[in-house]
Image (cartoon, rainbow, N blue to C red):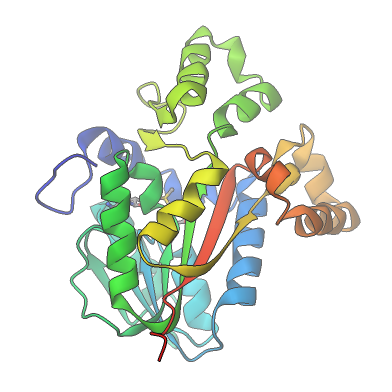
Length: 280
Ligand SMILES: C[S@@+](CC[C@H](N)C(=O)[O-])C[C@H]1O[C@@H](n2cnc3c(N)ncnc32)[C@H](O)[C@@H]1O
């Protein structure tokens, strides 16, 4: 994110999110698979409610609101003003279980006391921190605010996601897409094209995320595919619409989620680690 002093992301990232597409992303297309799987993995790994969860880079609040309904005390931190506004509206729409707080902030510098939360979610900020040292700042901040024994959950985008998406969704028909995808494969630094093809992002090799968490202090790390091969279906809409097939897609993803040789086939990869208590 460069050396911004305030929480605002760089102009290209801000302009991309100011288009307002993010709020719908998880409700349509393959976003529904991402959402279903993310919720499933959160439900499986988070400590039981009630527990304090910091959703850093929480966007427009889909997961935060979902967790609040399930009894978690959720604090959302997010730098994009439009996302903050939409998250506030989403929270207000469930007045019996609102979010505990919604504040402007940057994952690299959390205005939050250390050793205080039961879980930190980083479902987005690591995408947009191109420089490894900044991803470390972000992960160390998450580790700092966790109570010993608490969990950190981070999601990254796979290095191969644009290429596979291009092949599945015919994006290579646009000649501009080719140079974007090849540069992604070369160095992981993704530069979208104006308003198309996502925005500036770092795309991880699946093997990179575990050492990044370990370097920040996390232990007992495991890495799981979010969409797995389910994100590669050309006729996704048709298959997802069929309840029985949808369940088979999800079961295929579950049964392969931890298979390291397949992680790069998943658009998103989730890394789960703990701030281990000090050994006596
Ligand atoms: C693709 S969205 C994901 C939103 C949500 N967490 C989800 O999973 O649907 C990425 C989010 O990360 C936020 N973000 C980008 N840079 C950040 C930073 N340095 N600190 C915190 N959040 C950041 C963006 O504003 C955006 O809302």
